[in-house]
Length: 241
View 1: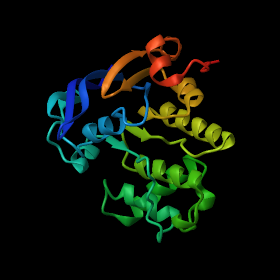
View 2 (view 1 turned 60 degrees about the vertical axis):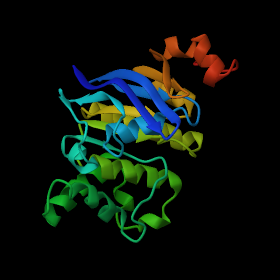
View 3 (view 1 turned 180 degrees about the vertical axis):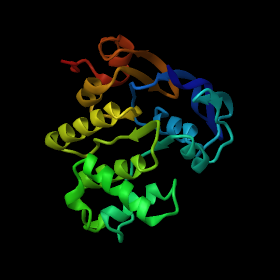
View 4 (view 1 turned 90 degrees about the horizontal axis):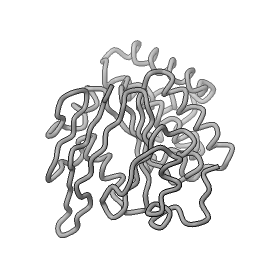
């Protein structure tokens, strides 16, 4: 069943056309990878979906209704949330308190928020970090805490903006396992990522943006063999295997 649909979405910043006639849909329980060169419009898509920006044209349907004009917190209440490319935890708070911030989106009761945060930390095998200050964590752990905080809002659809950026191969493997666990928990995902072998391995479908336009969409195998994608982004040396 379809959970999200973008319909001929466009966004301009002054004279710059950031997105032009972009359409795609996401099926419930699936992972869509969103890839393309820097400046292709990927994060702009996330900003439009989550209400940080409003498109100049087109519509965005989530759960069968248009979400145009909704503020980010209202979009989040519907079950659609995101992480950010530049991770900014509440450095002076503990890991547990950071995750509780997400839980407070749904409850004002600190005991309920704490219980929910502890459950998520255990789910992501992060319980051992719960009393550490978020500002002292490695980049990898800060990214995982950001995902934990997003999960505390109980999303139906989770948008991850470069969750594996800056990680080594071991950390990437850990992140992939955790993303798969999130999906197995019934959450649909859209992932922006430049670590190609990672995003190709976990995505059900891939959409490719270039200069604000969707140039192709398909399975990882179809996309990795597409000549336009190879020319615009992947390069001749790329091999999906």
